[in-house]
Amino acid sequence: MKYDALIINIGELLPMDQAGPVKGAAMNRLKVITDAALAIKEGKVAWIGKTKDAVSLDAEKTIDAENKLVTPGLVEAHTHLVFGGSREKEMALKQQGVDYLEILKQGGGILSTVRATREAAFEELYDKACFHLDRMLMYGMTTVEAKSGYGLNRDTELKQLEVVKALNEKHPIDLVSTFLGAHAIPPEYKDDPQAFLEEMQSLFPKIKEKRLAEFVDIFTETGVFTVEQSRGFLLAAQDAGFQVKIHADEIDTLGGTELAAEIGAISAEHLAVTSDEGVKQLAASDTIGVILPGTSFYLGKDTYARAREMIDGGAAIAVSTDFNPGSSVTENLQLIMSIAALKLKLSPAEIWHAVTVNAAHAINRGDAAGTLAIGRNADVVIWDAPNHLYIPYHFGVNHVNTVFKNGKIVFERQRIC
Ligand code: NIG
Ligand code: FE
Image 1 (cartoon, rainbow, N blue to C red):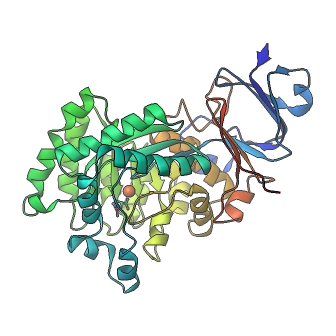
Image 2: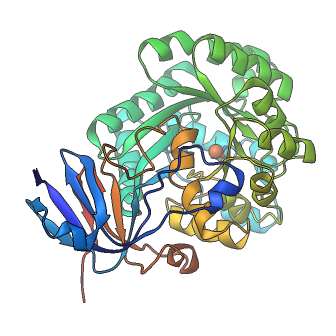
Image 3: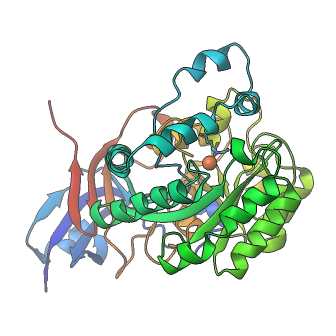
């Protein structure tokens, strides 16, 4: 057989091929193949072994990995990819100590992005999101979740979801779409949040019929939606055939984590201030905890999610950027991996599980992304790093050397020296 491509001299290959989602202590068990090689055929991984055994293989193209680290493409399970405008002026307010929820209460924050997103034309939103997506690809992400939630009316929510659909058709990154119409209460429904939720709920059939989203999400938070309102909304979403996610216990401890476990949400996301009971219930459930430590960092919080206790209790944890214009303005998941090491106290093995196989399971792509095994998509990253410990260690920069999506090279670092 002639392979399309053969990568040889891989210093460390991480196949990430434990059956997922990988829970508890198993997150710390990492398979590492040294002196490895990997062959690609028709966009899939076709062979994995040692470089010495690859010499007899025939391939169109051979790539020398020069003893670098090779992993699956990173999977990003939580972004707010499509939005108008930006909010750099809020940074000064934050420095003066004005809190995130206070800015929202004053009509800024999410609501200021809602105004900009409502005003923006489809093409403008598309181009802007495409730019961020290009950057994500350069940073090693090959599958990305994208939430709506800056429309808060029927037309703009649909416009955001259509942008994701169009980008998914065009861009090498695979996009997975989430309807987050319940992201904030728009001014026109200020006094009647329940009526607003019903308005967003009325979009479920259309979103389903046009396949515009796989998941429904809600921001369960002080001044936004209560646990009761969230339960009703998410149960209606499940009845309409969606899997559900929750922005849970991000700023105040409301019990969104417990709600996620109770209703069988695929994921509970943020969890920065989850209660003891929430930690216990998450660990005992099949709900994946998607931890977003960039948000605690960017909002200047001292409290980070108790990911250590969650894993020690047996939970499956993913780690993602929460890329958005307000609470975590970065496409750099590698930086978030460093924060996960330093602030969440996760081990490198746990972090690699959290940004590959477990993140894939959190967006229902466990069979398509996050793992390098024979027959799986050849979404592969060659890193300018000697081993898997190196990425969380050397923080804040881009370590990507080459990105393959479905077996094709889609990004290569420019060499100046
Ligand atoms: O995940 N918490 C709600 N949503 C986003 C922030 C969105 C924004 O500030 O624009 C989050 O942190
Ligand atoms: Fe978010």
